[in-house]
Length: 151
Image (cartoon, helix red, strand yellow):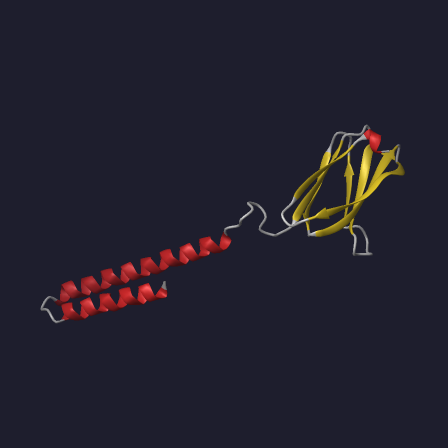
């Protein structure tokens, strides 16, 4: 691409050189100024095209290369969901409290294997109703449902 610009500049300046041999120096100056404007506009267009190519993504809203994990509570009780990456031994990555018929999501979850635990909150008493593991891939969106029969 830069070769094309340099070729254009070479042809432009050779034309300016040929025109400078003529008598009308005022016209030559106008031609040089106009040619400079064309070159600047061409460089701006090429830079804008380069920037737009760098910002495009292949999967829509997945520029951060992370997953989205959502839980839908279809049980009659409020639930708490603990999500933790399997390899980590530290505290939970996310703790979601979902009201009855509600939905919560954990955004920006990185690729990997995660353990989850669904805890039913009946009158503020906690009881584990379901445990499991889930494998999340990049740019994946997973919707999980919690039912009353998961107990």
